[in-house]
Length: 347
Ligand code: SAH
Figure 1 (spheres, rainbow, N blue to C red):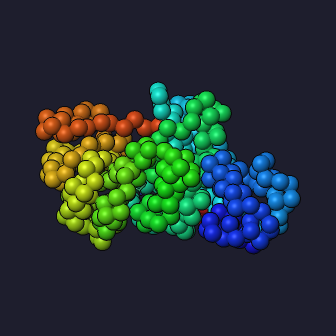
Figure 2: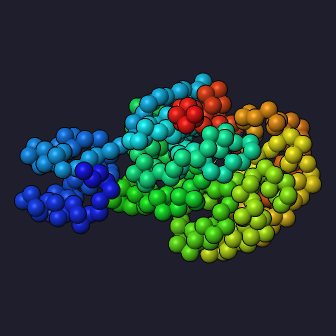
Figure 3: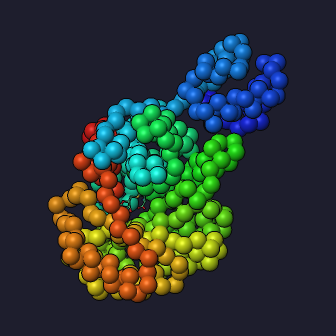
């Protein structure tokens, strides 16, 4: 049997006709599937019992389920989601003053192997289907309403995986979030975070994708970056810089540069100066990130060195913010998502 969310609308209309139903039933069905996100045909109350039974015997309606939930003392909640093929991914809800941000995953594991990140160390399993990406939103939105009495206000693709290596499915999930068929959100509420896949950044510009773009740069020196982030070999920094320049000029968007501060690796004035030179050809905002411990080889930048680094950039008129770490007591902070059960399954 096919999963109803993996066939196209024409096939659904054809099915309705075959079972003697009116065409507009397809529209009602779609609302249950994409706007409300129910988990069974039986919940589709404006469809007749007979039609619900026919749907149940002809189609699957697969969905993610919450297999575990961890709450941090700062209000952050990490979810372990189980997929239909029994693998696991993680998602995080982060409440703030007026916002609730959902951090969602785009792949099971990650193929990039950045040395400071726990996700890559568990290996890569597969890409997520767009329904699996979208389901993370649907499930976490219900939880957000229950726990914080507020809907999710922002989504960041900063969970497990590299969204630009799963381009088609990520874009389809974004389409559902932003179109009237799904949630009708403004794309400005969504941020895609990438390690810097050059070709796909150009494609985002050419496809006029209007979500925000964040680039996990972390080091602006080519050799150092190659050592920390092997993806630099196939996406050299000068090419990345040109792609970002192109992206900014085509979209009019400012690029967010993520910069993880690692003591004695990338937090000197020389490093700040390299960063400045990398960013001077496109409009930019810098987010400094505190290192969340995942590996004994790295240490956090001490506060005093961090302020010197930050002030240097500010003096050069860059917009710089320091991202507060959230949920580190439950391993939900940036770079700590590893869906431990995935690793147990692989072994
Ligand atoms: N692959 C995409 C999406 C993941 S986002 C990307 O790299 O942008 C996860 C963010 O957390 C990235 O910026 C990543 O570099 C950062 N990160 C990884 N390990 C970290 C750690 N130990 N402490 C803080 N941030 C980390």
